[in-house]
Length: 328
Ligand code: UDP
Ligand code: MG
Picture 1 (cartoon, rainbow, N blue to C red):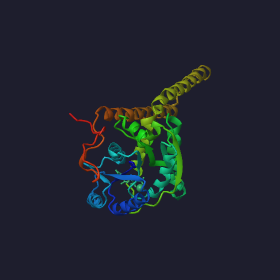
Picture 2 (picture 1 turned 180 degrees about the vertical axis):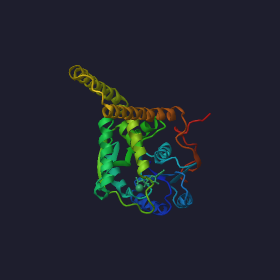
Picture 3 (picture 1 turned 135 degrees about the vertical axis):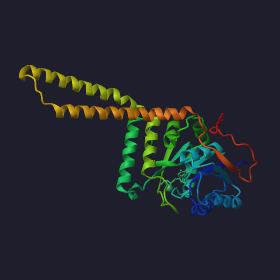
Picture 4 (picture 1 turned 180 degrees about the horizontal axis):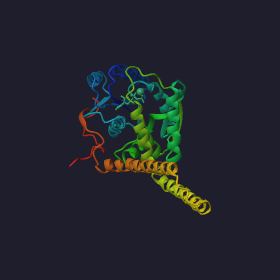
């Protein structure tokens, strides 16, 4: 009987110091899950440190490692897409390479999958350890996103999840270049269960998501899944016009009763500057969307591959890469 295959997808960006430990932990769990055939698709996302050399060593040691080397740093979302295009498992699990996502949770994920779940979400139960500001910004983002988007991104749930092959095929059919994974994951739906886990501390190194990157990711998430920021300007415009009419009315009546009131510099300035600001924000929001349309219509590939090594135990074949489109 053929064993079911499980693919782990791990993106590596400057993770030297975590590679050895990551594969040691995964190998241990793979041994204990001997009823399954486990492979790891490790995507090197343009690391500038020793990560790639260490990944090659890991591949020499473990026969189930599939290595992909991207031509530069394309970002985690693109690295995950490269992994999803290559994973051959009946179930696929994206997992961080810094060991913040405990590989041991795989046992429980597989149990839920065997019971019929098509998506097994791992939900963090340790937000308490985050800083106040971090917690506040994360909560605000999810609130705002879910308020104005059609798909609900569950709170405290990251990319760490098990997905059935059906879900992976659905994800691969989504054609967009801008890939806000959390949103795409939520968009495809499917029968979902959630299990709790405790997010560990980074094994080594530091996080590559600073405030600016997180802000951009948040903008990406909102503009990818909602047009509310575009539409709201109609209503802001109507409200401002109504107020202006009201103000005009009172001024006209006031002038008829009390005569012309010449001073008015302050209210003119305040009104003019306020409206100028509001209009600039509106144009800025338009710009966010137009910029995204511009990037999207170019149809550039999501990532480019420099080198690739299939697992030893599989005959080499050209990978079917939906997102590596031909560029003319
Ligand atoms: N990562 C990546 N490309 C990037 C940034 C990060 O592939 O441009 C990987 C990184 O190697 C790690 C995962 O994405 O495996 C999560 O990154 P990180 O730990 O820096 O983020 P955090 O855990 O702080 O959200
Ligand atoms: Mg991390």
